Each structure stands twice: as structure tokens, then as C-alpha cells.
View 1 (cartoon, helix red, strand yellow):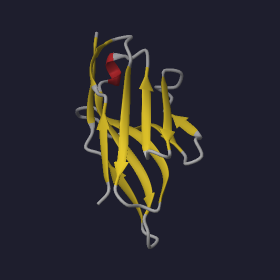
View 2: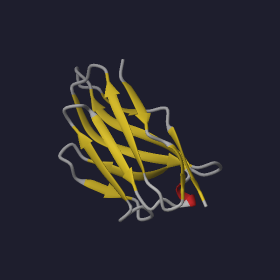
View 3: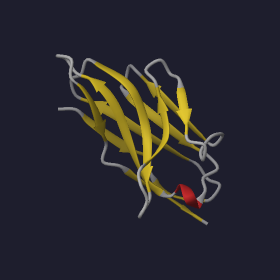
Length: 120
């Protein structure tokens, strides 16, 4: 059974930094793209950043220049370094992995989420 487990969330003051990690466990064939999304209370889930299997990133405009996504393919882990945090970054951050399973099934997996709270 595939699981995505996030860590690294917490409470930080505006201007501070946090580093999120998400590790995928379980038997798979290959991980394609991995990414981070966030959902604030009363708002829709939105893309924060994604990274391809070859390491090409893309970012939401709201986080460009402040957040950096990276991945360790050997450890099936994706990271999100968040700098210069703002109160509007407060949300539950969810990890996503586009996985190709043995047998050819392709499936989007999601983590449970980790809370990030940025105080003024």
C-alpha cells in the first residue's frame, strides 16, 4: 500500500522559514511528477509547486522567488523550502505524487497534509 507522509509544518512568524518533507513508501514502478498543494479555510485547494521526475520545477506566481521545490529520487522524497513566509501562506500543505504502478495503473496519491501557520 502506497503512503505519502508529510512532515515539517508548524507555526512561524512572518518572514521566517520552514522546510516541508514528504516521503512515499510502498511498492511502485515509478514516480512521475511530485508536488505540493495547499488549502486554506474556506478556499479551494491550489497548486504551490510541482517538480518533474527529471527535476524541472514550476511554481505558483504567489510563491515564486520565495519557495523552492526539490526531490530525492533515491529516497522517493520531495521537499519544499519556504522562505520569507507571509500570513497568507497559512494553510494545510498536501503532498501529491503521480505514480505509475506495476501493471500499468497510473494513480494520483495524496498525503494527509501538514499545517503551516504564519503569524504577523
